[in-house]
Every structure is written in C-alpha cells, then in structure tokens.
Image 1 (cartoon, helix red, strand yellow):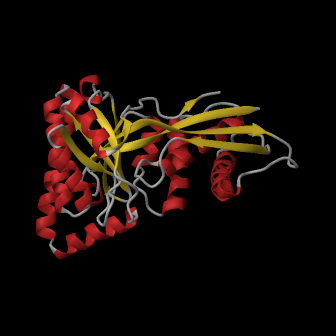
Image 2: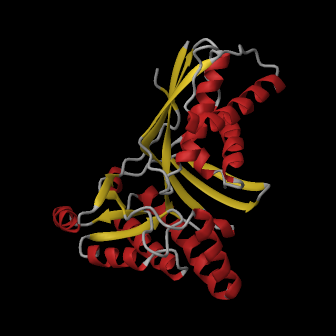
Length: 317
C-alpha cells in the first residue's frame, strides 16, 4: 500500500502578536505544500531519514494511541516515508504544522485503509505540534488542515475560537499580492513574543491601546475581503504595519525597504517579525505592477507569488 498527502503552509494576514493578547487573527492557507508519502515495506528495509525519525515516531505514536483508544480497526504495518516541501522553514509559514497535518493524515489512511475526518486530523496534528513547540495557538494546524481563511481568537488556553470563514480572498485582491523575503530573522518566534511581552509589561496602557487598534484592523480586513474592497484591504495592510513598528517587531532594514517600495504599494511583516536585521516575510500589496517589477529587479528582491489554498490537506496518490 502507498498513500501520499499534501498539506499547505499559512500566512497571517492580520493580527500577529496581538493574537497573544486575546485579540483576533486572520490567517490563510497558502499554496506552498509539504508532501508526505508512506509506502508499505518490510522491517528489514524500513529506513527513516535520521533528521525526521524522532518527529515521525512521535506522530506515529499519537495516531496509533488514538486508533487503539477508539477501538478503530487498523493494521500495524512497517513503512518507509518520504517528505518533500516547498514551505520555507523559519519564516512563519507554518512548516511544522503542515508537517504534522500531512503525516497524521497519511498515517491514518495508511493504517486504517481509509481517509479520516478533518476534525480528527486537526486534533491529532495539534497534539503533535504541541509536543514540538510547547504551546502553539492551533491556528497554523487548522489553516493547514482545513485550508482557506481562518478567523482565530484565543481567550484562554481552554477557550479558543477557530472559525473557518466560508469565503475566499477575491481575485481583485489576490492578484495584487506578493510575498517578499527579507531574510530569516536572527530572533526566534519565542524571542519576539518575549520582546513584545516586555514592552507590554513596561507600558500596559500604551500597548493595550495599540492592540485594540490592531483588533479593529483585523476585523476591517475581514470586511474588505467580504466586500471585495481592494482599497480598504490595502489600507489595512498599511495600518497594520504601522502598529507592528510601534510594538517593535519590524527592523530598521525592513522599515526602510517598505519606505522605498511605498510608491509602488504597501506591505507588512507577516509572522513574528525580527528586530535586529531581517524580519522574515513581507505581505505586499502592489498598486503599480510595472513599476514594482522594475524596483524589484533594482533592489534584487526575493519574491514568491501569493496564491491562497482553499482545500487544506488533500490526497494526492
């Protein structure tokens, strides 16, 4: 038996960092995938790449424990696994969550002989992501599992609202979006979260005001998508970046780049950001394509097309 599943990465459209403080985030799955293939083999020939062996074994245990606890018929078989990914690591695109979703889905099918419900996949993949990253929000896994747009709010650890929005990013907006790679930040996501927490503790009144404004922008962005209003959407991107600068998660280098690009469009960091040098990915809305292409070549920008993914995890083979 052989099965292959693909799971997408994700991009935060609005709400990074503010989501830690009970504010909403708007997230979309993006058409960059991790592909997991499981193929039945003998114990003698069972070889797993050393770099992924431990993580695969963690997911396997989660899946088998679930099947056993629910008395679901399954056949324990040996396998070889191959993983291919076009999701960049360390840029806030949810590569770890996509790994969990793809491997969980493939294993459920491989051991039971049939595809699983996405609610089950989401729950088991989240267990894996928690073991790898301590206390993730769960939105990365949900975006990868379900695809499309996700509206997420975490009130408490035991109270999270992860809502799949039944609409797509309209073509009139998506066709003008692009991702710009400023480079992998020196800081980790945990470093950036800690930096914002310190700023919050030093001046909670000021930070609460900023976070409240970011919540308004996130809600406004949802409305812009629903109304297919590209002007409102681009305004949300610009305003979001202004507040991200105020909380200190966008570097001088990144701010300077966005200033240079302002004649051609507006952009914001997407993800945890970076303070010292590089800030990861920029979500950029192009207002003048021809002029942007000229500037992009001149500045030697590393760009990736923005294409939303609406299916979530899918069976390939």
